[in-house]
Image (cartoon, rainbow, N blue to C red; front, side, top):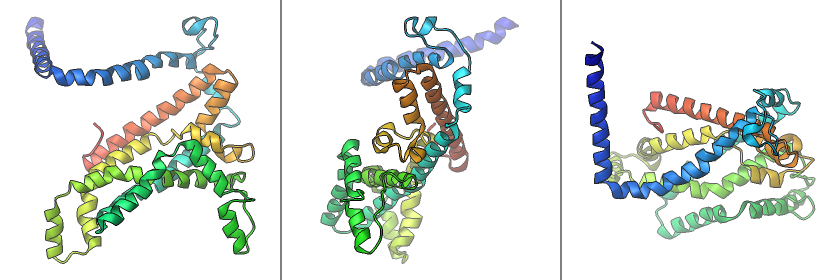
Length: 317
């Protein structure tokens, strides 16, 4: 009986394997093009994951990763019981949510506006102006922010004092940090992020707009009933990706904008890992914090992807 129950399965398995080998032989050029990408991810993304195990060890440099003693969840417990734990989580999650709420819809609105522009010259001008900040380095952007927001010589404070207001020390007051970080990021990335929506809008059948115009639909109704449904799958995919990295607030810009006076609002997981891991040489502790961050992002990505698949039948996989 057992022989009868396993034979069909093994036959199907060998048939699938032969079919796969046949496909690879037939399209070997395409698989050859894919090979560098596969090697890149294996070498730079999967092999380094070997070092994640130091999050569960007391890493000792002269003993190496394998010989260092196992300590279980000791470093995770230390992070969860840390005095700064809730401040770090609140700041990281706060900046991530703020960035999502503000930064996600603005490129969509910009793409819809550019798509509706009738003058080609005006359209190219807006695209050039909005794309340009993307090519500035983070260091230059933070330098510009500090220059414009300087309480002594900054343009913003000059306008405030011109109207009778008091100068504001934007970079040293914690209450301003999240807004400056998020809105400067929106300025820098909204044009570049709108490209993918413009590409999605270009794929909408023009006959739909012509038919809507014949039926008397104005531009707002055409945007609402044709453009937005047309780019909805793209919006959902990018929303899933953004939510999946909500705790992945970038290190470089926060670190450059950070100082001892705004630390209360600017201390996030990435800067905490840098201070404890690089400056404090606590490699196991920083690995545990980084692993916690990655696991939370992974869980959120899986959850949101599943919800999106059930609600809209659009998902990453």
